Image 1 (cartoon, rainbow, N blue to C red):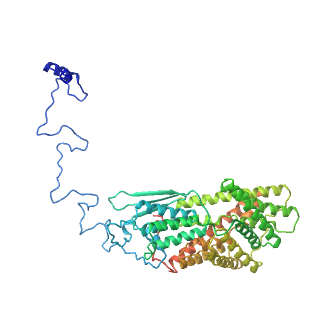
Image 2 (cartoon, one colour):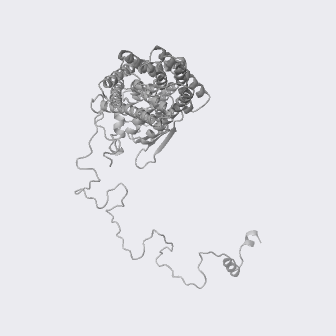
Image 3 (cartoon, one colour):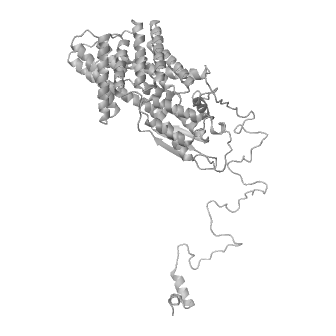
Length: 554
């Protein structure tokens, strides 16, 4: 007998014995009579099965099964509900090619995806399938990272990312920008799966020369007459990353000192005050670079950089030198106040990017607290040593107009060097800063409040900066950021800190509140001037822009 025959039962009794041993919890017990189904109806049921007795009308052969993209059965072409396309149709948005790409992309980003103008169809051969979608998204994220790390506003970063994707034929893209994260989603069609890529911004640096080069790259990619392959775009982007800063380190340190000296003259200082503020700012700059080389966070860098100007001003007071110590300390504060980050944060908030705006304003607050800690420590030491610092001392702002106009232009010039701007933009931003101070001084002489004077002067800075950027199809930051340097609230910040150091907390908080109001006036004025140039002057405008968010709160 073989092994197979040995395993096989030899009789019906043995077979029944084996079957009785195999049981299941779903088996019908012996003695229970179960009615058999008739007509081949399956015994299995489901919670989605229709109960017996429910009469459901079956679709006729002429009525196919509906889908999510077919009109409902109650829809009538005669009485169309307002949820569908209105009888007048959707207004066509005209986007001419002779306007800056920022306006065209911003206009399309503020439109729903279904209403955006489609790309013109391009007839390609079978071999020319176009660049791969993941590589285009990667290039887009790398460009957006450079722009966001350079201090560009979130709305302009989104517009640039959308322009890059659209230049390579990816029109159904949705970029998303936050303070540290960039993401973009591309959906080929309504039935295809979307492709999403993201990139984290970990390092930030101020280099407006690199920022201008990235803008030129995006402008060339957006030009339909300039065909740039994906490999050429990657090559140009790599060259932009490898480019060295236009100014060496010693030039930046000298510019920091000249900025502080010019600011001290702006608030009434003389030659001795100029030299003292210059030395204090240069020493603070070197100490900040030393802390950065040791890996300390920026909070401590600002704290250390704020100490030398305050220490020099207190030392001159203790030595009974006939000099305005307040002007020395105020000049050192001008070189540290984060005006660039403040303007960018308020601009993001005004354009509807509240998460990014909150993060940037929180960063500004930390920098400001670092400056406050550094100056307060030195002021407290000076008060304990017997330095007679007068919180009620007034700084002159209109007694020497020619000197102050020259100082304001020098301040804007050195600020532009610290921002690593291109040499071709330094003259324009210097003149813009001089005009801003002239307007501010004239309004102060006419009896206007400092907040109103600052807002109007900052508005002109934003207006002229936007016009210059549109003339050159570039970013507006190199033409506006350095020009607001003379308007920064350095004196109000110093007197507030001095009052707090002298146990006059109420007066100190009032002065710091005034400094915060002046800072907000600068940021709002710059943004308002930019919007005026877009909406009313029609210089390179793409027509009427839709609101970024809602209107009147609902």
